[in-house]
Amino acid sequence: MPELAEVEFYRHQWDSGLGERIAEVRTHPSARIFRNCPASTLRRDLAGRKMMSSHVHGKNWTFGFEDGKWLSGHLGMTGALRSAEKDFMPSKHDHLILIAEETALIFSDPRMFGRIRLDKTGSANLLPQWWRKLPPQILSAGFTKKLVSEFAAKHGGTPIKTLLLDQRCFPGIGNWMADEICWRMETAPGVLSGNLEQAEISELWRSTRRVARQALQVIGRNWGNPPDSWLFPHRWKTGGRCPRKSCHGAEFRREKIRGRTTCWCPVCQAGGE
DNA sequence: GGAGATGTTTCAAG
DNA sequence: GCTTGAAACATCTC
Image 1: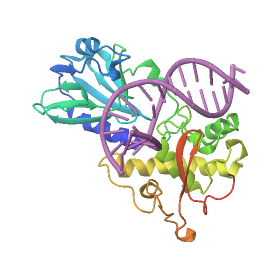
Image 2: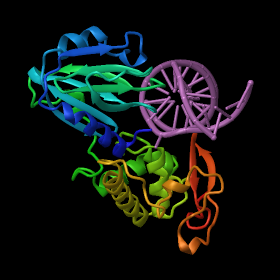
Image 3: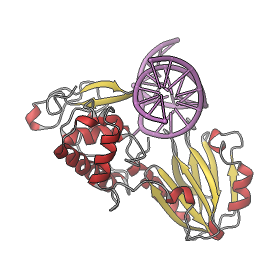
Image 4: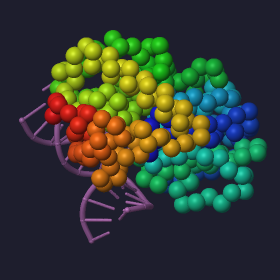
């Protein structure tokens, strides 16, 4: 489920543990989410340490602990973070549980495409090296029109929808946001990136930032529902219709583009393919 | 029962 | 080298 706004929401679920000391680390030993990080390492490095900070970058999150220990992860398709009372009843897919002073912090993930890792930088102010090398976040000053333009040119044969899913340039964009951005741009998702004119590149850049900002406002704190004026609430319904007035209730099309189900309006997003 | 799901990695083929 | 497509991962829902 999680794209950048949902990851931001989940990060805040664990913020209730900030400033608290981890008393105990419970792990489901065989869960696939530990494939890059043995449960014993988590216990050794986190137990007894205070959680100092929380961060997100695209779909990645990390929590800083005393002595520069960093618990980071990715939620895959079905991962989630939540907090609960310390004596909560774990359910089947609660693979990692940090028992803090007042709350329990829980990582659950039914499909287990998610993963976690632990890094040591020695300082609670120094993020792990791999984190510092991540590309500019979409709402940061480093995410420039030039960056988007060069990336599109470099991958000219890639449909714009697929380009938007590339985390090397669009960190945090996932399937629904990519469709939303194409729809805002009024550009068919199958249009090849190399065929975009400079004005369309500008529109791509602008729509990406706008969708990211609005998604964070709606979902990032309280997980609200995106309004009916977006593509989002219509995209999975069979027979979903474009909410743009000028499209007069045109029915959305759904097709796979490069392996991912894509939804678009054949009227306002006509042309290209 | 079957298909498909808001993701990423890996591998084989062109 | 590059790109592309498919498979794999594991479970749930419609």
